[in-house]
Length: 396
Ligand code: FAS
Ligand code: PHB
Image (tube, rainbow, N blue to C red):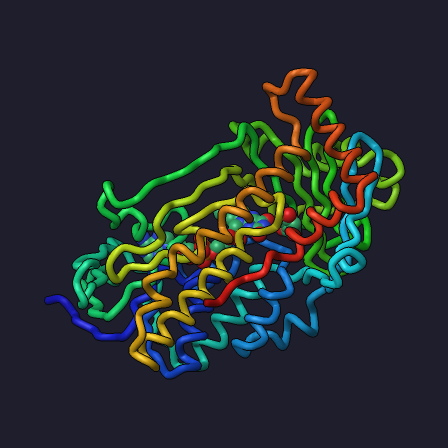
């Protein structure tokens, strides 16, 4: 016997995109049901993004989930690019007047989950067999199983917030969607340790042995990344091997301040650039990683998801409040106009800061020349800074 439930917007995925969308719609009295195949503690525990554009900070604050972020987050006015031992600071605040906020995605997810749970949100977590049906009708449906029971959500709209490996993008008829992808020949090995960060600000390094990134979650919790071969395994990397390699890539001056410690978490993320066009089909709208992926070099993945959700929530609110469809009809086009520019920046910084196994001597010289140009040109530094703090979002 299938349990039938009704809501205005069915949201597939309870990551940052799905949770934020449910919160923004709830504040306008629009009912949603959020489903996820994982339990809450798994979703909250996933170590991912660490840097927020200030516009993301503003959306989260406006959504009523900014208190802990403003109390515990670390505003940053710049970051370092290091190239074979030479350093150049990108002065974000001096060049753009804006800063970024260092605050972990895990914390944002916890803050959103707490807000939604205390706000009476209907969740179905730990579901299986999620299927979308009738997405081109005005009564799309979401099927799923939970505790061996069959459920069907009947709704007006479906928000596909189920990430790169979700089912929503797969629900598009194959002749209605175009996929664009670049898979990079390396991954990022990330390590979290309860030690003070090596420096006050982030350091992105291109060393002949590979890329490294020094980031943080607080003044007592550090996050480090090493470029590793695409087929590398975490098991091959003891903590000691990680610290030895990071020390080499940082160089003597920087690594003098490196405080090593036991890993709390260690994982490898593959790197890809990916875009699905369009981001809507009938009453199904994609938001976040379900529609696009960027290499984390530009710290854009989470910020792009938030930008999609702002535009999608604006469009759904206009539909329910004013009965207008204009923002819904132009959702995908408006998102993609900005997404491709962010894809470009993330690809650019990845290309500049990583060792590519197939790069010849000319391409290595091009990387060096790009770094030197950025270091010597305020215009070139400004171009990086304005992308890193976040491009403007046209809300239509
Ligand atoms: P998410 O993937 O976060 O959430 C999708 C949700 O949908 C998940 O909870 C999943 O369980 C659920 N789901 C999937 N299939 C489902 C189904 N069939 N039924 C029901 N639910 C389903 N971004 C940065 O800015 N910096 C970083 O350093 C960074 N590191 C990353 C490392 C990794 C390993 C990954 C995968 C991503 C990383 N990102 C990073 C990007 C990341 O932060 C995403 O941009 C962000 O999580 C996007 O949020 P969502 O779109 O909500 O997708
Ligand atoms: C992180 O802190 O996890 C982080 C920061 C900046 C990036 C990527 C990841 O570009």
